[in-house]
Amino acid sequence: MKFPGNLDDAQLLAARASQADCRDGHGSRLGELGRGAGRRRVADCKDELEQLAERGDLRRVDQGCGFRYVPDFTRLYTERIRELALTCSREKLLEEIVQAKEEVQEIQSEFGVESRAELEASLSDQEVSATQARNRQRSLREWEVVADELQLLEHALSLYDDLHDVDPSVEGGADEESPETRAASDG
Image (cartoon, rainbow, N blue to C red; front, top):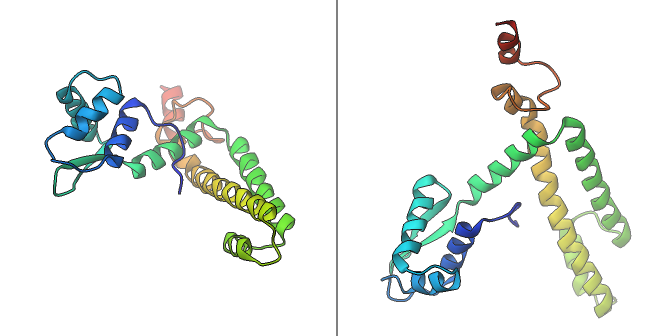
């Protein structure tokens, strides 16, 4: 699954660290990354990565020859769901869900398939030209992105009321007034 949302500079630094070759385990990766990210010292990079790990934005993974830092995709994923649920109205979420489903149906109709696996399998059909295969591959990637977005939107919609109830100060709150909001306005 592709990660939804944007990575900040520190998370990009960690992503580079996770892709770097494991060399001597004594900071050579971080030194290279530091220069690539505009950092002056290896210690600065390491300190920043450690702070991000302590904060929970990154995970520290032991590779045997040193540590690498990777984004905490679970946290980023759930934060994206929270962001959608708190910044979009219920109506907007529903509209986006319908639109995503329509996009999937258009792809299914265009290629006469029911699933992504079926579309993927059609790439190797003898009757399919290279141009057609490329178009199917592009549509397959689009379907995967739309399916990921759809999953996020559905999760956000399913948590919409609960998230608004625990944080009634959010603008555009849940459709019904929560007990906390009623208590605050009565007091």
